[in-house]
Image 1 (cartoon, rainbow, N blue to C red):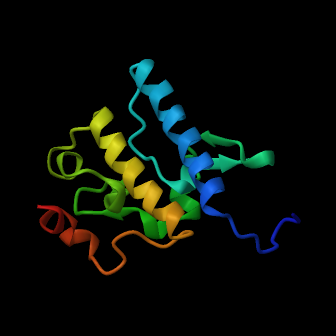
Image 2 (image 1 turned 90 degrees about the vertical axis):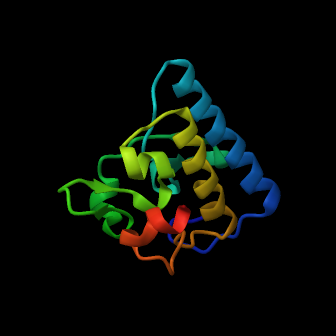
Length: 128
């Protein structure tokens, strides 16, 4: 389909893409790497719905609403972060799995903002 045209993905295609994302995350974890910013904005979709997990440093510029500074001068993807990452800045394969769950939610809602009604400053208490 042409760039900029509307295209709807079916459930089978979304699952196919989701499997590729988790395989990319598994690859990183086997290499002892933690992503720390897994989200649809950091996934590139190519021809035939081939998905590559990236760490696009431009994401912070292209999606400023996805990053929040909670008073410590660090912009973080708060609504994709696991509770231990929010509270103690402790990232692990488990925190990437949490972010993958949020990423799946983004995909299945066709790009809706996760926790849209929750203030970023309230995410920690919301998750507790």
